[in-house]
Length: 470
Image (cartoon, rainbow, N blue to C red; front, side, top):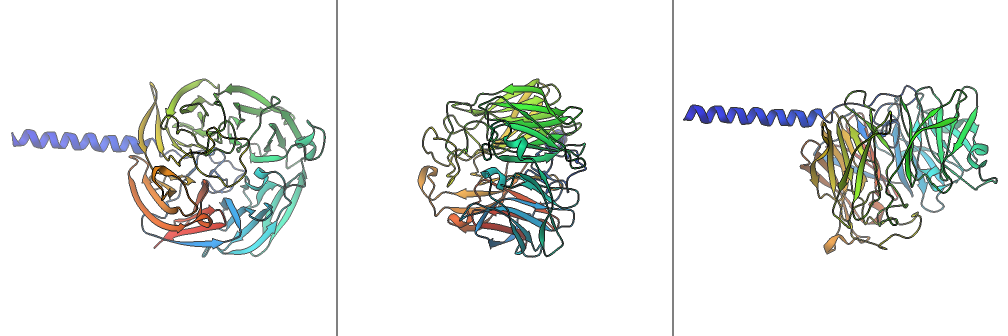
């Protein structure tokens, strides 16, 4: 009898180990590295060209010390180049002008800053670092900018005019604005505008080409690129595009999604809140995912990137409290979706929400692509206040949690914020550390970027946190 129990115990242990190994294997495939970008994990707001929101580096871990750096600006984009020097693209609180800060990697303090000309709101959000550690973005001048640094000084090294492509479809200056940019594998810089023009700029020749997507659509999130094409989500559809012989963008496929009856509380626009995410277990980019805006529950939508063939549609979060403004994390066969339903953005939302407000509902879910479709592996009730970042080195999800003080998840200006670590394989809450109380420390669903040395930089409403191991 004892021998049988021993054998049974061993068998159960083996099954448990296999299950854990299989769960971990689903989250350990790095995306392909774009040769025109800086390091994987810290070259774009969402980590890489594919917008996987992963990093190959380990995070700070459980025991940390956090330092807040006041900048008088909201800092949604903090990037780290191959030289190890962090750069932050922030939006000034007073006049919303975009400002680039060069940071001391030992402290997070700014050592240089460069104010750019104000354009559209998204022109002060999305940027990337190229393979020479230059920040590539656009400002209100209508030019693509390459912002370089020499260790103690920031300067515009190069400009490439794209204004004619941005506003050519509507005919006058200011009728449309730059939204985001990303390079493809040939080195072209793809850009999108808020009124759904998609263009390319060739840094070698200066040639600029553009294609207008259907009238009435808008782009409120970033572009993503993979070897097979460039993805953009409008407020009505997901597109995969490729470049023609002269660089003109061509639509390979379009998939409309359910945009719901209206913008939901905790979203900035009516439609998907997601930058498209490439992921997959073989090439790292065979699938493409977004979330829709359906009511009463939104869905994670997964497509085959090459053809646009639907793989699955999975409802996430509770009915009537289901919505997100965040891009999903995607790696291997796994996708992680965080709810932002009810999150109180201070400004910038487009149009009224229905209902006008709601509680901070919270929620985080992992969905795995299987041979039969997709299945929800685990859910968590954490109230994430930042886009989580997944470390492929330690298998942890790093985010910030907003702890509301009133019952029912009602937010106040005196809510508390906690650095938070979850286990990606199980959803278990591993660690938390207090960051601060009140609006200045609100991480406002911004992305955390992890650098070498297990240091995390996390943007907030009035500056940024530098979080490091104790």
